[in-house]
Structure formats: C-alpha cells, structure tokens
Length: 418
Image (tube, rainbow, N blue to C red):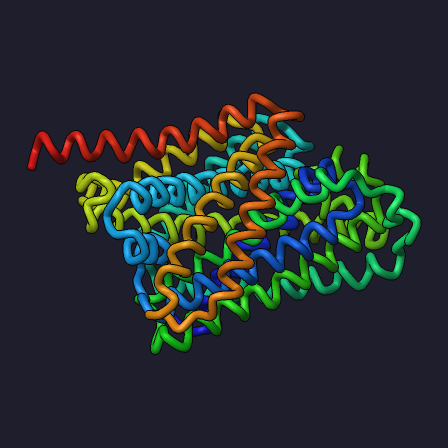
C-alpha cells in the first residue's frame, strides 16, 4: 500500500463517519459552536495521532493498535480488556456509518422510508464485507477515487455555503454551556476516530517507519480543517434546530439553499460514497485486529480460523454483530457509546506510548498532554451523559463490563483447556 492509499483509507474512514453522520448529534450538544468542537476534537486527535504514529513506526503490523497495547502492557488484563474495547469501537463506528448510509439512500430514493433505510444499511455492510474478504488490489484504487471525488465535492460545498453564510447564526449567543461544549468534543473526536485505521496498514506499507507517520499526519491534516470549514458552512446556513431535525442528512439539506435540488442530490450521493468508504475502511481494521488478537491468544482461536463462507470466522462474527447494532440501536446511542469507548481506548494507548517512549523516540510532553486532555473530556462527557441520558450511560458501562467479562471468560476457558 502507498502512503497516499493509507492516508486516503484514513480520510475515507474519518469523513464518512464525521460530517455525514454526527453534525446533528454535535449540534444538539454544542449549538452552532460545532466548528469549535471539531477544532478542539482535531487537536485531541493530533495528540493521539502522534502517539499512534510513533508506535506504528516502531511496531508496524496489520494488528495496528492491538499490537501497541500488547507491546505496552504485555498479555495481561489491561491489554486484553482494551483490545476488546477497540474491537467493540470498530463495530460501533461501522454500525453508525452504515445507518447513515441507509438514511441518505432512503432520503434520495425512497422518500425517507424507515424500512428501506434498514435495507440499505444491511446492504452496505454485506457489500463492504465481501469487498474486504475478496482483498482485491482494485479496492484501494476505487477507495482512492471515492475519496478524491468526495473531497472535491466537499470543497465546492464549502465555497457555496460560505457565499450565503449568515454570521448571526454563528454568534456566540447561540453557543451552549461549557459542559455541553466539552462534551461535544467527545463526539468530534469520535468523528476523527478513522485515523486509527491507518495504523492497521503497517504491514502493507513500504518503509512503514517513515510511511505510516506521514500517512497518519496527512489524513488528519486534510480532515480536521475540512471538518471545521464544513461545520461553519452548515451552521452558518441552517439554524441549529434545522440541523438537529435533519441530523442524518443535514449536509445534503444545507446544500439545497445554495444549489437547489441538484445540490441535495449531489451531496446525498457523495454522502453515500463517503459512508460506504468508511464502512469498508472500518471493516478492514476489524479484520486486522481480529486476526492479530486471535494470533496473540487475546481472543479465542476460533475467531482467527477460517470459515466455510466469508473468510475468517472473526469477519463473519463481526459482520453479524454490526448488522444487529445497526438495525436495533438508535444513532444517538451508538454515537455516544462509541465516543466514550474511543476515549477510554486512546487514554490507555497514550499511556502505553508513554511507557514505550524510550523505544519509539517519542517526546514526553505531547503524550502527557494527550493523556490529560483525553481524561478531562472523558470525565465531562460521562457526567453530562449521566445528567441527560442515563440509559446511554448504562450502555457505556455495559460495554466496558462486557469487555472485562470476555477477558475473564477467555482466561477461564484457556485454563480449563491448556
């Protein structure tokens, strides 16, 4: 894989899971200050990206962050539980993006039918799984083409919305409280989570010690400014209630005032391209992580074994779980749980990077700042969720408990069948 291919894998994953999916959710938390949420979330992603890039340059592997956790903590409870959480996060973000694909497709072709949205959601998951199992070289070329088209159309979107922007809609008076703002940074960071997909390309890059960090920084350097500009364009064109009401398709609705029906159609098609690319990229990461985890005995061996249909059993299991989440859980809950899980994972990964800094050559201060900021955002987000959506908080805790249970269960089984 080339540096460009790896970077575009990250961009496709991030953009598909970011502005096309989370604008409405972020708007409900931060009001029209979502552009600040993406800015601060981007800073947090850069700090975490530095840690992951240093680890990836030193330990290139198709297992990505799973490998880094094992290097940082050994094969104990911390690395095992964090690996399960990483796996769950990949499934959650894949489900979330798939749901968005379904809503965009339904809005364009079936007048917003809920039934058809679920059909399209299921279809994109199955298609992306088949593409990853095939593993064709043409997939990288197609993915690159999709990202190029997506970035070009989004650049046009930014230009036309900035022409019609109403500064009053972005006034600080429309911002919500500081707690809301910090909580929204958790969602913004989750929108950047796709950069971690680059870490799973280490085994496929030429000279990964140089190529992986470059691909990581290139993907973040393009995506973060794009997020900020799009957020300014959307919330400077639509009111906050309009964005929230059209949460799943807000970007397409924002294009309509400037470009008419053609703008809505164009942005919807690009959103479908972007979200499908993100589904593909996240399943690619899930495949790499499940194989690495099974090989290291962190996951049951059966996950890394071959299935009669569908490649590795881990891929089949992953696809089934994604289908269940996407069709049974609401988008808001998926986004919130995924954001909390992502923050926990990167908090642990940053600590691993700090422990390994003498081997990776990483500087201490970015790692320390990354740990502190991640912990602060996580605490505020959890407190805010406890106040506004206690059921979602229960789901967050439930995912962590499930990871602990899976680790303990694996150890019991391994002890009884040495």
